[in-house]
Picture 1 (cartoon, rainbow, N blue to C red):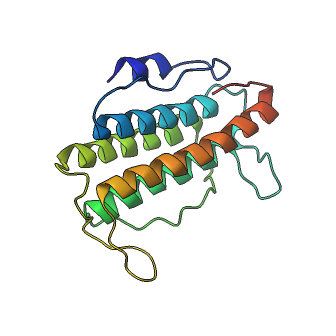
Picture 2 (cartoon, one colour):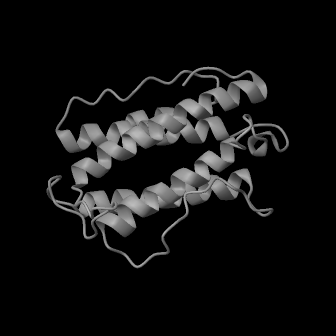
Picture 3 (cartoon, rainbow, N blue to C red):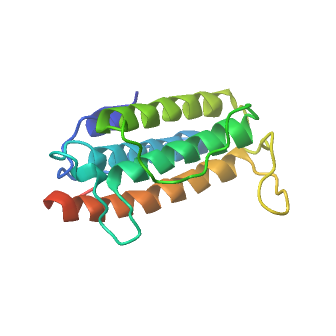
Length: 175
């Protein structure tokens, strides 16, 4: 774990963490930003009183734990199923929570998916390597570089949603 990751882990949601200060190669920089965003999402979903992390903040039903569950499925889909070619169930990318879903279980599931994703990334010697499976209607082959950039974009978009939902839930602001 990097120093930047240690600084963001277990941080209260209203503390504004800074982005990683990695001045390194492409892989390290991409992974540092992705890990930073992953932890920003987790920080927003943790520590709310009662069931506030389950309460929709918008008419569509989006809630903090649902965002984390969605990102868990995105991690599994892009790194395990698409890139690695693993035989895992293809997710529906939904944000619906089950009765048994708790803050602890959803965050633990996300962290487990992130750990598996990081293992896939670590095994990839060349960011230009094409994934085992093509995606989209035209069956477009994706490189690890493309998947990393896409997951940074996907996680950042949902981190912004999480910022708003958390502020609505308890007034916490910041990254």
